[in-house]
Picture 1 (cartoon, helix red, strand yellow):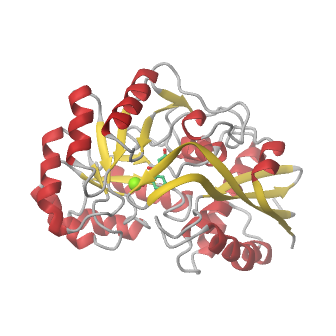
Picture 2 (tube, rainbow, N blue to C red):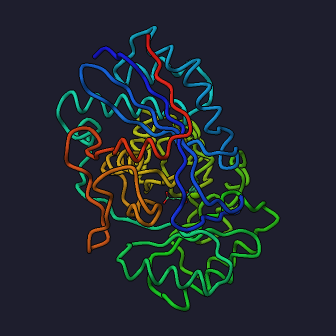
Picture 3 (cartoon, rainbow, N blue to C red):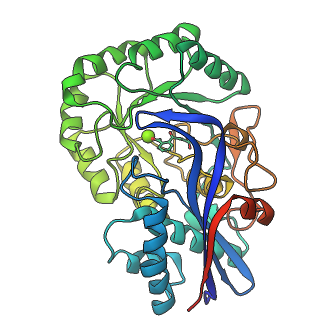
Length: 369
Ligand code: OSB
Ligand code: MG
Protein backbone atom coordinates (compact mmCIF):
# COMPACT_ATOMS: atom_id res chain seq x y z
CA UNK A 1 0.00 0.00 0.00
CA UNK A 2 1.30 3.41 -0.92
CA UNK A 3 2.07 5.56 2.11
CA UNK A 4 0.61 9.03 1.55
CA UNK A 5 1.94 10.68 4.67
CA UNK A 6 3.76 10.09 7.93
CA UNK A 7 2.92 12.16 10.99
CA UNK A 8 5.40 12.56 13.84
CA UNK A 9 3.98 13.57 17.21
CA UNK A 10 6.15 14.45 20.18
CA UNK A 11 4.11 13.90 23.32
CA UNK A 12 4.22 14.12 27.09
CA UNK A 13 2.08 12.24 29.59
CA UNK A 14 2.28 12.69 33.40
CA UNK A 15 2.67 9.44 35.36
CA UNK A 16 0.00 8.46 37.86
CA UNK A 17 2.90 7.94 40.33
CA UNK A 18 6.55 8.94 39.95
CA UNK A 19 8.89 6.27 38.61
CA UNK A 20 12.36 6.06 40.11
CA UNK A 21 15.15 3.81 38.84
CA UNK A 22 18.90 3.79 39.37
CA UNK A 23 18.92 6.65 36.78
CA UNK A 24 16.77 8.94 38.92
CA UNK A 25 13.14 9.92 39.43
CA UNK A 26 10.79 10.82 36.56
CA UNK A 27 7.30 12.27 36.86
CA UNK A 28 6.24 12.29 33.22
CA UNK A 29 6.93 10.37 30.07
CA UNK A 30 8.24 11.91 26.83
CA UNK A 31 7.93 9.85 23.66
CA UNK A 32 6.94 10.00 19.98
CA UNK A 33 3.97 8.65 18.11
CA UNK A 34 4.34 7.78 14.43
CA UNK A 35 1.22 7.66 12.27
CA UNK A 36 1.41 6.31 8.70
CA UNK A 37 -1.54 6.98 6.41
CA UNK A 38 -2.47 5.34 3.11
CA UNK A 39 -5.52 3.92 1.32
CA UNK A 40 -7.88 5.47 3.85
CA UNK A 41 -6.22 3.61 6.73
CA UNK A 42 -3.91 4.68 9.56
CA UNK A 43 -1.16 2.73 11.28
CA UNK A 44 0.14 3.77 14.71
CA UNK A 45 3.58 3.19 16.17
CA UNK A 46 5.19 4.43 19.37
CA UNK A 47 8.85 5.36 19.59
CA UNK A 48 9.95 4.70 23.17
CA UNK A 49 13.04 6.94 23.23
CA UNK A 50 12.86 9.03 26.41
CA UNK A 51 13.56 12.67 27.22
CA UNK A 52 17.15 12.04 28.31
CA UNK A 53 19.77 9.50 27.13
CA UNK A 54 19.81 7.47 30.35
CA UNK A 55 18.36 4.06 29.51
CA UNK A 56 19.79 4.23 25.99
CA UNK A 57 21.72 6.75 23.87
CA UNK A 58 18.58 7.79 21.95
CA UNK A 59 16.25 10.57 23.04
CA UNK A 60 12.84 11.62 21.75
CA UNK A 61 14.56 14.52 19.96
CA UNK A 62 17.30 12.43 18.31
CA UNK A 63 14.60 10.00 17.20
CA UNK A 64 12.59 12.86 15.70
CA UNK A 65 15.65 14.02 13.74
CA UNK A 66 16.58 10.55 12.50
CA UNK A 67 12.99 9.71 11.54
CA UNK A 68 12.41 13.00 9.74
CA UNK A 69 15.77 13.19 7.95
CA UNK A 70 16.54 9.51 7.28
CA UNK A 71 13.93 6.84 7.93
CA UNK A 72 10.84 8.59 6.56
CA UNK A 73 12.65 9.80 3.39
CA UNK A 74 13.93 6.23 2.89
CA UNK A 75 10.37 4.96 3.14
CA UNK A 76 9.11 7.50 0.60
CA UNK A 77 12.05 7.09 -1.75
CA UNK A 78 12.21 3.31 -1.83
CA UNK A 79 8.53 2.52 -1.38
CA UNK A 80 9.42 0.09 1.41
CA UNK A 81 5.86 -0.01 2.67
CA UNK A 82 5.93 -3.66 3.75
CA UNK A 83 7.35 -3.72 7.26
CA UNK A 84 9.86 -6.46 6.38
CA UNK A 85 11.15 -4.44 3.39
CA UNK A 86 11.43 -1.35 5.52
CA UNK A 87 13.38 -3.27 8.20
CA UNK A 88 15.77 -4.65 5.58
CA UNK A 89 16.43 -1.28 3.96
CA UNK A 90 16.56 0.67 7.22
CA UNK A 91 19.26 -1.78 8.35
CA UNK A 92 21.82 0.23 6.39
CA UNK A 93 21.60 2.97 9.03
CA UNK A 94 23.48 2.19 12.20
CA UNK A 95 21.94 2.39 15.63
CA UNK A 96 18.85 4.45 16.40
CA UNK A 97 16.76 1.32 17.01
CA UNK A 98 13.95 3.12 18.83
CA UNK A 99 13.42 5.55 15.96
CA UNK A 100 13.46 2.67 13.49
CA UNK A 101 11.03 0.61 15.56
CA UNK A 102 8.56 3.50 15.90
CA UNK A 103 8.11 3.65 12.14
CA UNK A 104 8.30 -0.10 11.55
CA UNK A 105 5.57 -0.68 14.14
CA UNK A 106 3.30 1.87 12.45
CA UNK A 107 3.79 -0.07 9.18
CA UNK A 108 2.92 -3.35 10.95
CA UNK A 109 -0.30 -1.87 12.32
CA UNK A 110 -1.22 -0.58 8.86
CA UNK A 111 -0.39 -3.90 7.17
CA UNK A 112 -2.59 -5.82 9.61
CA UNK A 113 -5.44 -3.31 9.23
CA UNK A 114 -5.22 -3.61 5.46
CA UNK A 115 -5.67 -7.38 5.78
CA UNK A 116 -8.36 -6.90 8.42
CA UNK A 117 -6.56 -9.15 10.91
CA UNK A 118 -5.09 -8.62 14.38
CA UNK A 119 -1.36 -7.87 14.23
CA UNK A 120 -0.80 -11.04 16.26
CA UNK A 121 -1.89 -13.07 13.21
CA UNK A 122 0.86 -11.50 11.04
CA UNK A 123 3.43 -12.23 13.75
CA UNK A 124 2.32 -15.84 14.21
CA UNK A 125 1.22 -15.23 17.80
CA UNK A 126 -0.45 -18.11 19.59
CA UNK A 127 -1.47 -16.69 22.98
CA UNK A 128 -4.77 -14.82 23.48
CA UNK A 129 -3.90 -13.29 26.83
CA UNK A 130 -0.62 -12.29 28.38
CA UNK A 131 0.38 -12.95 32.00
CA UNK A 132 0.84 -9.46 33.46
CA UNK A 133 3.63 -8.32 35.74
CA UNK A 134 4.17 -4.95 37.32
CA UNK A 135 7.43 -3.00 37.53
CA UNK A 136 7.78 -0.91 40.68
CA UNK A 137 10.20 1.95 41.11
CA UNK A 138 12.35 2.92 44.07
CA UNK A 139 10.28 4.55 46.83
CA UNK A 140 11.15 6.94 49.65
CA UNK A 141 10.81 4.19 52.28
CA UNK A 142 10.64 0.41 52.38
CA UNK A 143 7.16 0.78 53.90
CA UNK A 144 5.98 2.71 50.85
CA UNK A 145 7.39 -0.02 48.61
CA UNK A 146 5.71 -2.85 50.51
CA UNK A 147 2.38 -0.98 50.46
CA UNK A 148 2.59 -0.59 46.71
CA UNK A 149 3.43 -4.26 46.28
CA UNK A 150 0.40 -5.12 48.45
CA UNK A 151 -1.88 -3.10 46.20
CA UNK A 152 -0.70 -4.75 42.98
CA UNK A 153 -0.70 -8.26 44.44
CA UNK A 154 -4.30 -7.64 45.55
CA UNK A 155 -5.19 -6.59 42.00
CA UNK A 156 -3.94 -9.95 40.77
CA UNK A 157 -0.64 -9.21 39.03
CA UNK A 158 1.18 -12.48 38.39
CA UNK A 159 4.67 -11.21 39.10
CA UNK A 160 6.33 -8.21 40.77
CA UNK A 161 9.58 -6.58 39.69
CA UNK A 162 11.31 -4.04 41.88
CA UNK A 163 14.00 -1.62 40.81
CA UNK A 164 17.24 -1.82 42.76
CA UNK A 165 20.41 0.26 43.08
CA UNK A 166 23.33 0.20 45.53
CA UNK A 167 21.82 0.93 48.95
CA UNK A 168 18.30 -0.16 47.86
CA UNK A 169 18.73 -3.85 47.15
CA UNK A 170 19.14 -6.52 49.84
CA UNK A 171 16.86 -4.73 52.31
CA UNK A 172 14.23 -3.99 49.68
CA UNK A 173 14.13 -7.67 48.70
CA UNK A 174 14.03 -8.72 52.36
CA UNK A 175 11.12 -6.35 53.09
CA UNK A 176 9.04 -7.58 50.15
CA UNK A 177 9.86 -11.24 50.81
CA UNK A 178 8.95 -10.96 54.51
CA UNK A 179 5.47 -9.79 53.54
CA UNK A 180 5.11 -12.06 50.48
CA UNK A 181 7.18 -15.25 50.81
CA UNK A 182 5.70 -16.88 47.69
CA UNK A 183 5.05 -14.32 44.94
CA UNK A 184 7.07 -14.38 41.74
CA UNK A 185 9.60 -11.63 42.41
CA UNK A 186 12.44 -10.26 40.31
CA UNK A 187 14.74 -7.22 40.43
CA UNK A 188 16.09 -4.77 37.85
CA UNK A 189 19.29 -2.73 38.42
CA UNK A 190 19.40 -0.88 35.07
CA UNK A 191 23.16 -1.31 35.05
CA UNK A 192 23.89 0.27 38.45
CA UNK A 193 26.52 -2.26 39.63
CA UNK A 194 29.96 -3.51 38.60
CA UNK A 195 31.76 -6.78 39.19
CA UNK A 196 33.20 -5.24 42.37
CA UNK A 197 29.67 -5.51 43.81
CA UNK A 198 29.55 -9.29 43.30
CA UNK A 199 29.31 -9.94 47.06
CA UNK A 200 26.18 -7.78 47.39
CA UNK A 201 24.63 -9.37 44.32
CA UNK A 202 25.32 -12.84 45.74
CA UNK A 203 23.20 -11.98 48.76
CA UNK A 204 20.22 -11.67 46.42
CA UNK A 205 20.41 -15.47 45.96
CA UNK A 206 18.69 -15.75 49.36
CA UNK A 207 15.38 -14.31 48.13
CA UNK A 208 14.34 -16.92 45.59
CA UNK A 209 14.17 -14.36 42.80
CA UNK A 210 12.97 -15.35 39.34
CA UNK A 211 15.84 -13.35 37.86
CA UNK A 212 18.19 -10.40 38.27
CA UNK A 213 17.85 -7.98 35.36
CA UNK A 214 20.80 -6.02 33.92
CA UNK A 215 23.09 -5.68 36.97
CA UNK A 216 25.95 -4.18 34.91
CA UNK A 217 26.01 -1.48 32.22
CA UNK A 218 24.90 -2.34 28.68
CA UNK A 219 28.31 -2.94 27.11
CA UNK A 220 29.60 -5.30 29.83
CA UNK A 221 28.59 -8.67 28.36
CA UNK A 222 31.88 -10.13 29.46
CA UNK A 223 31.47 -9.14 33.10
CA UNK A 224 27.92 -10.51 33.13
CA UNK A 225 29.39 -13.82 31.92
CA UNK A 226 31.76 -13.76 34.90
CA UNK A 227 29.00 -12.95 37.39
CA UNK A 228 26.48 -15.57 36.25
CA UNK A 229 28.48 -18.61 37.48
CA UNK A 230 28.81 -16.94 40.91
CA UNK A 231 25.02 -16.87 41.37
CA UNK A 232 22.18 -19.39 41.57
CA UNK A 233 19.67 -16.81 40.37
CA UNK A 234 19.43 -16.48 36.58
CA UNK A 235 20.67 -13.22 35.07
CA UNK A 236 18.39 -11.58 32.52
CA UNK A 237 19.65 -8.96 30.09
CA UNK A 238 17.68 -5.94 28.94
CA UNK A 239 19.86 -2.96 27.83
CA UNK A 240 22.68 -5.24 26.60
CA UNK A 241 20.55 -7.03 24.01
CA UNK A 242 20.26 -4.69 21.05
CA UNK A 243 20.12 -7.20 18.17
CA UNK A 244 20.01 -10.87 17.23
CA UNK A 245 23.82 -10.91 17.26
CA UNK A 246 24.15 -9.52 20.77
CA UNK A 247 21.54 -12.04 21.94
CA UNK A 248 23.53 -14.91 20.43
CA UNK A 249 26.80 -13.61 21.88
CA UNK A 250 25.27 -13.20 25.35
CA UNK A 251 23.89 -16.75 25.32
CA UNK A 252 27.09 -18.28 23.89
CA UNK A 253 29.11 -16.47 26.54
CA UNK A 254 26.81 -17.48 29.39
CA UNK A 255 26.17 -13.81 30.21
CA UNK A 256 22.48 -14.53 30.94
CA UNK A 257 19.94 -17.34 31.08
CA UNK A 258 16.85 -15.27 30.30
CA UNK A 259 16.23 -12.41 27.86
CA UNK A 260 13.89 -9.42 28.16
CA UNK A 261 12.69 -8.54 24.64
CA UNK A 262 11.73 -4.92 23.98
CA UNK A 263 10.77 -4.14 20.44
CA UNK A 264 12.08 -0.56 20.62
CA UNK A 265 15.46 -1.52 22.03
CA UNK A 266 16.15 -4.00 19.20
CA UNK A 267 14.90 -1.82 16.33
CA UNK A 268 11.53 -3.36 15.54
CA UNK A 269 9.40 -6.47 15.42
CA UNK A 270 11.43 -8.12 12.64
CA UNK A 271 14.53 -8.22 14.87
CA UNK A 272 12.49 -8.96 18.02
CA UNK A 273 10.99 -12.05 16.37
CA UNK A 274 14.46 -13.27 15.34
CA UNK A 275 15.62 -13.03 18.96
CA UNK A 276 12.46 -14.79 20.08
CA UNK A 277 13.09 -17.61 17.58
CA UNK A 278 16.73 -18.03 18.62
CA UNK A 279 15.76 -18.25 22.29
CA UNK A 280 13.00 -20.72 21.49
CA UNK A 281 15.45 -22.98 19.62
CA UNK A 282 17.73 -22.92 22.64
CA UNK A 283 15.01 -23.28 25.29
CA UNK A 284 15.88 -19.88 26.75
CA UNK A 285 12.85 -18.24 28.40
CA UNK A 286 11.94 -14.75 27.18
CA UNK A 287 9.48 -12.16 28.40
CA UNK A 288 8.18 -8.90 27.00
CA UNK A 289 9.67 -5.80 28.59
CA UNK A 290 8.03 -2.39 28.64
CA UNK A 291 9.04 1.28 28.52
CA UNK A 292 6.00 2.72 30.35
CA UNK A 293 4.37 3.07 26.95
CA UNK A 294 1.07 4.75 26.25
CA UNK A 295 -1.73 2.36 25.33
CA UNK A 296 -0.55 2.47 21.71
CA UNK A 297 2.91 1.09 22.45
CA UNK A 298 1.47 -1.29 25.03
CA UNK A 299 -0.98 -2.72 22.49
CA UNK A 300 2.00 -3.39 20.20
CA UNK A 301 3.75 -5.18 23.06
CA UNK A 302 0.69 -7.36 23.69
CA UNK A 303 0.69 -8.59 20.08
CA UNK A 304 4.42 -9.33 20.17
CA UNK A 305 4.11 -11.08 23.54
CA UNK A 306 1.56 -13.47 22.02
CA UNK A 307 4.40 -15.39 20.32
CA UNK A 308 4.82 -18.87 21.83
CA UNK A 309 8.28 -18.38 23.36
CA UNK A 310 7.14 -15.59 25.70
CA UNK A 311 6.78 -17.84 28.71
CA UNK A 312 7.38 -15.53 31.69
CA UNK A 313 5.03 -12.72 32.84
CA UNK A 314 5.53 -9.45 30.94
CA UNK A 315 6.13 -5.88 32.07
CA UNK A 316 2.64 -5.16 30.77
CA UNK A 317 0.23 -3.59 33.23
CA UNK A 318 -3.17 -1.89 33.08
CA UNK A 319 -3.37 1.69 31.80
CA UNK A 320 -4.12 3.09 35.25
CA UNK A 321 -0.90 1.71 36.69
CA UNK A 322 0.90 4.20 34.42
CA UNK A 323 -1.42 7.12 33.59
CA UNK A 324 -4.56 8.74 34.96
CA UNK A 325 -5.82 8.87 31.40
CA UNK A 326 -4.33 6.78 28.62
CA UNK A 327 -4.37 7.75 24.93
CA UNK A 328 -6.71 4.91 23.98
CA UNK A 329 -10.35 4.14 24.62
CA UNK A 330 -11.20 1.73 26.11
CA UNK A 331 -8.10 1.66 28.26
CA UNK A 332 -6.13 -1.52 28.98
CA UNK A 333 -7.38 -3.43 32.02
CA UNK A 334 -6.24 -6.38 34.04
CA UNK A 335 -8.41 -9.49 33.99
CA UNK A 336 -9.20 -11.14 37.33
CA UNK A 337 -6.69 -13.95 36.71
CA UNK A 338 -3.86 -11.43 36.28
CA UNK A 339 -3.74 -11.45 32.50
CA UNK A 340 -4.31 -8.85 29.78
CA UNK A 341 -6.10 -9.94 26.60
CA UNK A 342 -4.43 -9.31 23.23
CA UNK A 343 -6.84 -6.84 21.57
CA UNK A 344 -8.75 -8.90 18.98
CA UNK A 345 -9.62 -6.15 16.44
CA UNK A 346 -7.69 -5.39 13.23
CA UNK A 347 -4.11 -4.14 13.59
CA UNK A 348 -3.15 -3.35 17.18
CA UNK A 349 -6.87 -3.42 17.97
CA UNK A 350 -7.08 -0.33 20.18
CA UNK A 351 -8.61 3.08 19.45
CA UNK A 352 -6.34 6.12 19.86
CA UNK A 353 -8.37 9.16 20.94
CA UNK A 354 -7.38 12.20 18.88
CA UNK A 355 -8.40 14.74 21.56
CA UNK A 356 -6.19 13.00 24.13
CA UNK A 357 -3.29 12.85 21.68
CA UNK A 358 -3.79 16.56 20.91
CA UNK A 359 -3.74 17.36 24.63
CA UNK A 360 -0.50 15.39 25.13
CA UNK A 361 1.21 16.71 21.97
CA UNK A 362 4.14 19.13 22.23
CA UNK A 363 4.97 19.15 18.53
CA UNK A 364 3.42 17.57 15.42
CA UNK A 365 4.52 17.47 11.80
CA UNK A 366 3.07 15.77 8.72
CA UNK A 367 5.66 14.58 6.18
CA UNK A 368 4.75 13.78 2.56
CA UNK A 369 6.67 12.23 -0.35
O1 OSB B 1 14.47 -1.30 32.57
O2 OSB B 1 12.70 -2.35 32.15
C1 OSB B 1 13.28 -1.28 32.31
C2 OSB B 1 10.79 1.60 32.09
C3 OSB B 1 11.53 2.55 31.41
C4 OSB B 1 12.84 2.25 31.07
C5 OSB B 1 13.39 1.01 31.41
C6 OSB B 1 12.63 0.05 32.08
C7 OSB B 1 11.32 0.38 32.45
C8 OSB B 1 10.45 -0.52 33.21
C9 OSB B 1 8.96 -0.32 33.06
O3 OSB B 1 10.85 -1.33 34.01
C10 OSB B 1 8.22 -1.53 32.64
C11 OSB B 1 6.81 -1.22 32.17
O4 OSB B 1 6.62 -0.59 31.11
O5 OSB B 1 5.87 -1.61 32.86
MG1 MG C 1 15.04 -3.34 32.55
